[in-house]
Length: 262
Image (cartoon, rainbow, N blue to C red):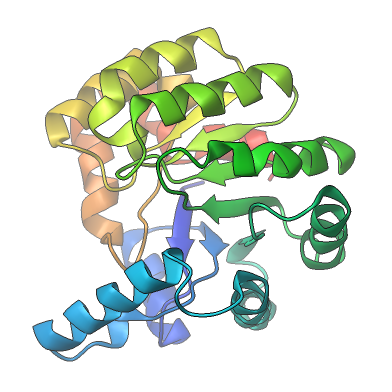
């Protein structure tokens, strides 16, 4: 089974299913989104979409609680259309008080039978905002946590995430994009910490991707990050760079299937 471990709701939904079929992707771990850059018709609209994202993450677009709620509603509607193809990770606002975090996780993740929490996209120096998220994960049977680990995070931020992973040793923690430019140091942490995993989407370079999947094949999870990544080319990169079929199989589906008990 080939599983895309990280893509976002993209429109139209039927087009995503069609591309999954064409690329031989059996299931997708689907994440919500607060904007749809894939609907842009030209570069000017793409630029406007990305500016909206930056303003959103900077807190200039209103309450993240309400924004996340709408995004999760869209996610659930899509999963209900294709329950055999999509598995959901729900968006949880970081930085809420503990009681509010537990209530939000219960309402959004647990009651909707979603499989994990994320994507968490934080700024440099903000990892402390995840402490209640990790506590909530433990309270709800160790829900996996997916964290964006490319820019603007530094290696210090990634180290702070790894320390939370050590404390909550039963909670699977997925670091997005192989740790970005901090990939060498991040791999060393992944080797040390059993519950720390790497997502392959938006990899730094093909050299980096090949080096990592062959070094720690049991800790890497295939991801596309659609609409920012392409399903077929992302899959082909793993197949081309894996030194053995066993490495390719582990990365492309076996690892995430075991992690989520699919």
